Amino acid sequence: RNQLRLLAADSLGKRERRPPPTDYNPIMAPKKSMIVNNERIKLPKSLRLPQMEDHQFYNRERLLELGKLEFETYATLRELGQLPPREYIEKQRTLLPPELAEEKLELLEEGFGEWTRTQ
Image (cartoon, rainbow, N blue to C red; front, side, top):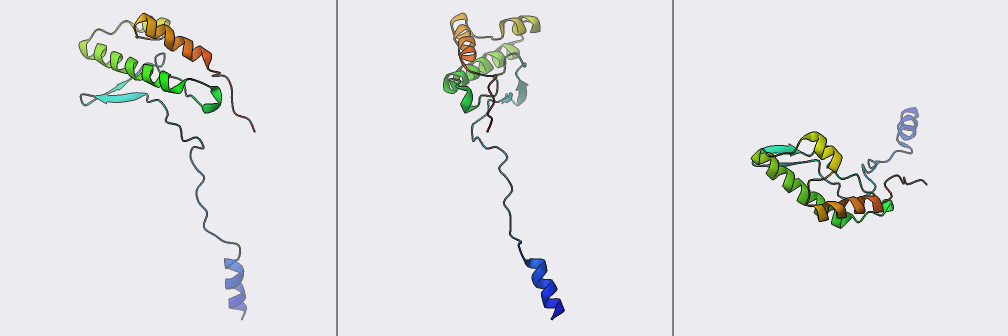
């Protein structure tokens, strides 16, 4: 009888628990690197898009389009060996043509990147 009590006490209150979700926002993050011609190409930090949360009100779709275009431009220039110096890239913050570069920088400024989500 004591053994049954011990077994019952041991199994009380137990249940299988699901692991917590790793990310509460199922938002696709912009990629830092891509594989082009079996070579992994990583964008410089100054060209990468910031992490864009939904509460920061970025125009995510257009920024991702511009980011993809910029990534392709970077990969092409790197393949041809015609990359501008790192100082130029960090100063300009983009490799896009002037009108697209201006649009990208304006869209980044329109968002509220410093906002955090608080409960």
